[in-house]
Length: 159
Image (cartoon, rainbow, N blue to C red; front, side):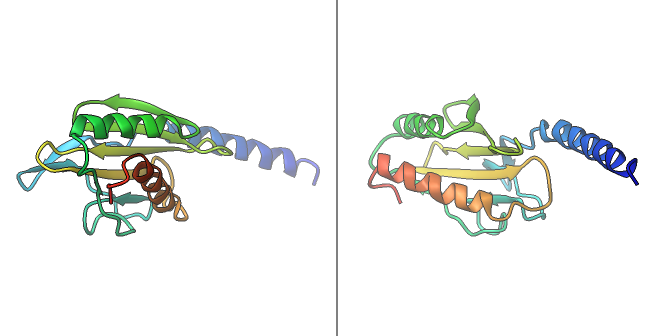
């Protein structure tokens, strides 16, 4: 019976090594053309992604508005707000797109959060997705709601 625990430990270490390796793969899609419009990619059918697009992801969350400022200011404030969050790195930033990586504290899970700022309307669309797993226990919905609260404090007229 004493040999069972080391075997279980070895199996757990192998599983974690595989999970960490897979966890490093980005699932971000960037901005793509969909039905003639530019937008962020769709969420997978698994409940580990939320998006600001109707019917995409497990939660109905709308885009963020920034009526009181121009797009450059909105993007600058977005990036600044993201960098104030713990364990976040900006992987890509363009005039119309921001890709951030969130890393969980305990298990170091990596989540991709993308933002798209269309040039013709004062909106910030987003997509938050896990790199690993089938569900997220509501983490992305809560994260995006909390980020929206932080962002709204920076630009009070945002809704």
